[in-house]
Amino acid sequence: MTTERTMTVPAGALTAATAGSRSDQSGMRGFEVDFLPADFRVGQMRRITSAHLRLWDLTALCDTATLAVSELVTNALRHGQGNPVGLRVTSSDDELRIEVTDGNPTPARLREAGESAENGRGLLLIAALAKEWGVSTDGSMTWCSLAIPEGRS
Image (cartoon, rainbow, N blue to C red; front, top):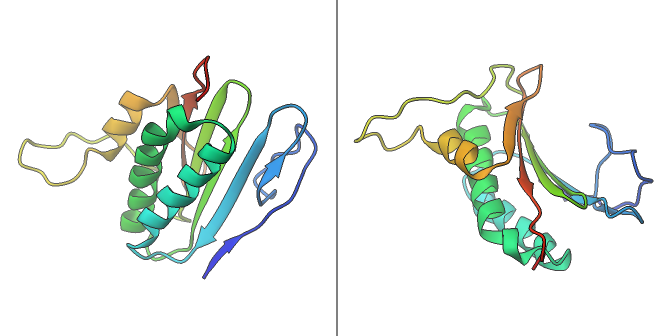
């Protein structure tokens, strides 16, 4: 079950309850996809994100943003306890924000991964790539923001 909703909302109206693909005169735009957890969704969410970034003339962020989406969605699949997952990507004039919800109240946290560990580095990558990152107060949403480059594409 993947749902992608499209709607236009006024500037400043982006809230947790607002869903869909949106664009307004102030340069704010975004999309939201809700889906049941499955490993194939990681690649699907990368492709959806990449398509929107090309549409928004933000191809310069494609590699970084799709890597961030991969890591955050993978974390949600691994630690979300089977809850539905939500991906929201919004863009303003100066930043791209990626949010992933998984319904698990245990907040994501940076871990030390040993040299031979096969996982545990996702949030370290996010911290290195992102302008900033964090977790919602209820622990169920992890987000990061990427700076929009001056030349855009």
